[in-house]
Image 1 (cartoon, rainbow, N blue to C red):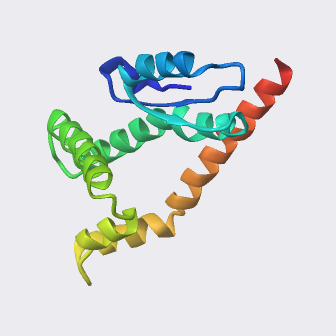
Image 2 (image 1 turned 180 degrees about the horizontal axis):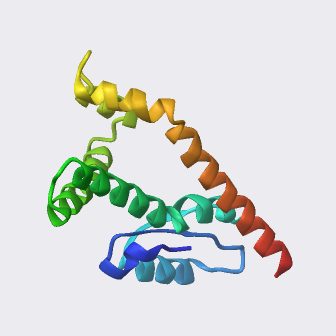
Length: 152
């Protein structure tokens, strides 16, 4: 399972294989998918969860970027600037997370100063159950993937 960022060489691909795949075959598959991004190996039983999180994940992120940009437009930023700021924030934050290997909560806390604008915004997000909504979306996509796979 790969995702649409493969179009620009930035995908997250998960592969599963069985005992019939030899080392040469496995290395060939990894080489192919490494050409379009990161490759992870998991057992087949995890693939529906991967679909829910990573296969559908780009759509979740696009909605978040669009919503952030719309927020910027609402407070009078030009649409193009708001969209680029939102996208760069997602890109830079993801890169920081991957390169530092720090927990997302720790990185969030580096931005959220006591009594500041960020913690005020985080409170608003938490009040709206944004975290639970994202978790439920991943779970719903996973359940749908399982149901589609049971039909096939």
